[in-house]
Length: 101
Image (cartoon, rainbow, N blue to C red; front, side, top):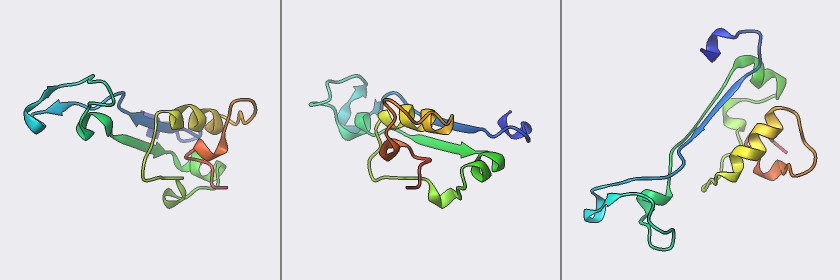
């Protein structure tokens, strides 16, 4: 649907809210306290899509995304705020995946 909005700069971010243990270590569950949870519950998928107009507006190439070895859910807040151009107050460009400072 976003691809059809040719003239509107847009980005899509997906990050799962939690992981799931699906038989690893004999466990079938989620929501284990963080200190006890296996890595399968702590590490979650993240997907980012950017329209060509968004990349042009932000002067980004796909490889410019501010990727890290570890991501946290706090990246979502700062990246959305930064994508919208609100960069005051609680915004931290270090936590914005679209910031290439």
